[in-house]
Image 1 (cartoon, chains in turn purple, orange):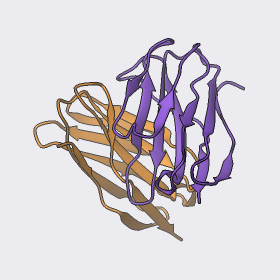
Image 2: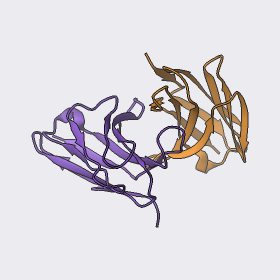
Image 3: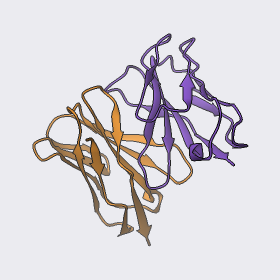
Image 4: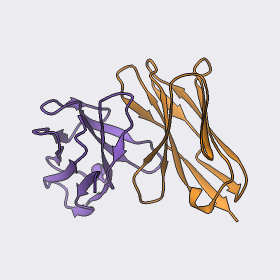
Length: 113
Length: 109
């Protein structure tokens, strides 16, 4: 089934630990995005990639890193998790950056204690 | 700064019509999106407006006024399954989406 998958679905993590959230799409979309969604706030862009091999910083990039080695995968790494990174993380993709519709994965609920 | 404003919560009756408003301030403007998000699920695309006017798509319509920095989503013949959050997002000059916090729509029988 075409779409975006994310793993894990949920995770509880001790502060200071390293964590990688996985995102894979099979739509051959060029652009991919990572957002976090917190209660009472809109989705906030963490990092994005307009095409394989390139990445860029969004609104809230501190404490996160990404890589885009190929078209399909766009992992998000928290090098040393802190409680303020407790959130729901959504990965999204679009055929091209800009006006094309973004399609979202099911999300990862992350709790940092 | 960039900002998207929409009401936090609205309540409507099954079978009725509801209008969800959104005002935006973005650095440049390349269009306005509406997404639907059911509780615990991912956002899904509803509409995209870049020109002024009304775009109708079945029971859902979206309106844009660029001069007023204003959009609305109109939902007709409301059904219980329309209970969800509705997210307004403006596309800025860097083609990045600026998201509102969402409007939670509660449908009552």
